[in-house]
Image (cartoon, rainbow, N blue to C red; front, side, top):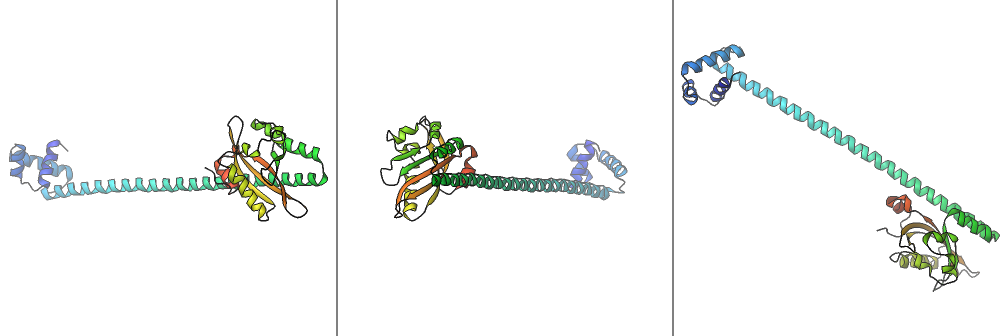
Length: 260
């Protein structure tokens, strides 16, 4: 369709007569009538009304086509969104399974170590006990229950944090110096409170600060040793380094203390 034909159709659709169209376009009425004839021949419509009706129908079809196209795009977007949401849910579920599995393994390792240490203690095999601690790379220490909580034993694995065992057992360095200053008060006070209430074992999670200032996360099990009257005498702790597990798994390991 010619540009002039389009202009005539637009004006006619807005209610212009042939005379008004001719005046608007500055052409003769005869020229307008000639365009109408070509429009009737092209559309197969018998008169002006039919040509305008075909124009409206075409516009309606175009609008419907645009609507259907946009609707299809929207539906595809919704399907894609649902698919991504399902994928994220699946990934989150898989991650939760991974967290639970790693936490389970950590607890099993700690339980196994605790059992082995308890058996060796009962057998009085101190040399073998020291080898178990050294081989497992677990930080183990024993402190007196009453203040000032002198260190009675410190495993050689403390060297990985820049200290020597005799720094604590002979030179009197408090074990609390190993623990991050923000965690130290709660780590000890919470264990003392629970042991005084009758607990025999407490699982804890806290930060250790090396001599070089490096911060490591550990998960430990503290066990109280009592005298013949049942009064607490000392506390033994066995700490696993869990820094490599990531923050989410460290949080899942135990609810104490709150990680920041």
